[in-house]
Length: 113
Length: 114
Image (cartoon, rainbow over all chains, first blue to last red; front, side):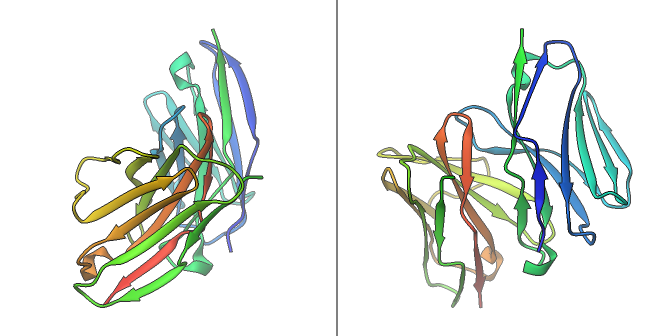
């Protein structure tokens, strides 16, 4: 099955860029996802990338995928205090069928004003 | 770490029947639990936020009369899929919050309606 690892904490100053990293094990993953959880709220899908892409940009968000190293990253440009949240990387668990996602434990991003 | 137990992990039911899925926080009290659904080959989508002792808050497009959520205690939330139809077949997952910034996930329930 899929195993997803990510660092637990990241602290950046407002206005700087944030980079959250994730590694995964299932090379057959077709999609990889980033979810955001704000304090007191549920998960919200932030962005995703298809496995045939190396990069996806969406406004301040840039997702980079290195399939060779099974490494996924999320870059947030011009980080704001409102970006403070927990960010989860997730990949499908091919061993469990197309339904099931395996999530990392989440990276808590703290933005210092 | 904190453990969230979801039961059952798999269930097959006949069309028209109701299915109850339980989500328990085993070693902590969770004032808030979240229910998600994953459609085939799609990502997880938040269905509703369940708060202990109050009505659940449903996301837009989620039928609250079809997906009944009961958060009866600080350690248990249930999702009942009423009058299930084949299109309700999906993967349902819950999560429970320990603090405002930590969430732990159940292992998920694969529902198949035949």
